[in-house]
Length: 355
Image (tube, rainbow, N blue to C red):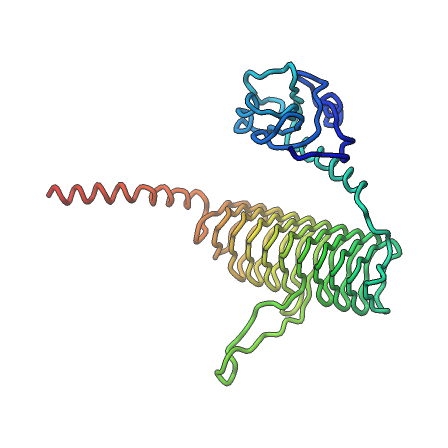
């Protein structure tokens, strides 16, 4: 059980939850909920979520007391005397609604530092900090920086000269924001994120001895309501900005190279690397462990399967997969052929042996 504890005032009944999510009840309306868990791992007292047929088949044997279920799904036969199903239009959306409730309640119970600058923080006298911003211990804020209203900067963060932290931004512990970078309003940067570090660029030294580093004098511009996962890095431009569009979500341990331009509401899963000067259109989805070559254009509304190696432009709206990546339908046909190669090899050997 993932105990909700005080976040939901110890427990709620199925009937109360149905009101919250605008659902209709089947079974025991007084079934109590004290925790939340997946349908396979739930125990008595847990709330679970069933949004597709794959999970629906587990309900009859599940120990969960209450399930939020997409309205048209068939759950088969189940004991409704002590358990309850709440039918909703979309179980995933209802799940998000419940998790938001839990998160909000837990946040109210948390021990939040008061607005202001902690005495152990070091703020340059030329920096501007909003009165209702929170600056935690051991934060360092450089010359001419600006920190907006209701921003929260947790312990150990470092903000270099001329950086701008807009209203409502949350920088978790040990985030680094380099010179002249801008973090848009209400964005969230998780622990260890580095924004504006040097781009990766070298050329052979003129004397032929070693490599000569290419200076990167640009910056990074992050739009509003961006979220960047723990220990991800966004390099500053060689000249001009690296851009992360509004509403984009980047998972943990991603690398965004210099002068990359990412559109609005792009989703990038963990362990993805994007080489310099690549452009990604609005609304594109990129699976985990994907690598994108430099100076390519990924269109709007594309989907790229996890562990793909993208070396060429992708037109708007296409789905690609593979290594090297290609249209998914072609990649799937190739995989089907490859899987049959051992059988074909065996048959060919038999034919040759019969000659």
